[in-house]
Image 1 (cartoon, rainbow, N blue to C red):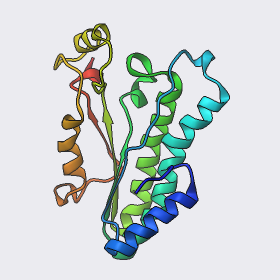
Image 2 (cartoon, rainbow, N blue to C red):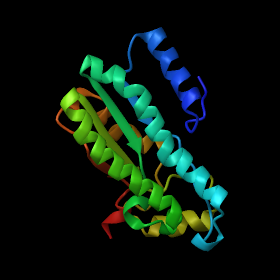
Image 3 (cartoon, helix red, strand yellow):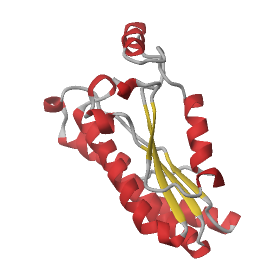
Image 4 (spheres, helix red, strand yellow):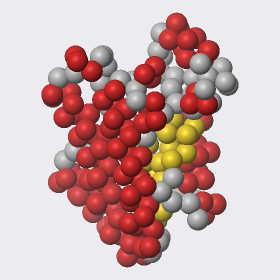
Length: 187
């Protein structure tokens, strides 16, 4: 099922469809995200609105749609994808505006962990480091030199944290941000 996470009507229809078909929502992974490129002074208002619309409002819309089902069952796990840019303010893998939206995701995660925890719903975040997606070789080499594990991350590298946060292995974990970055932020 496809949807634009910025559109509450589309989000509501998709979540209603999932609940009608499966009976409930056990796990929500908020993975939709966009990144604008360029220095902060070159970012247009439209680019900013798109960035916030997907990276922040999209999570708001999806949590609003999923949480009632989870609360009613007193069980659920929500995982929001943030970024190391949330703690680095952009930099090598983004820009200041992207980092700002991902910092909002981390703050939202902590707050939702407090608010939904008493209802049996855990909310956590994963902050990936740079993920390899056919970037130029020079970028990948420079990034690897700044990372103790000496490489870019992959989607595969996120699976362990995601499996942990969506399973009973993390039954006593909420409001947390797990950084999965090969040590990029350890410097």
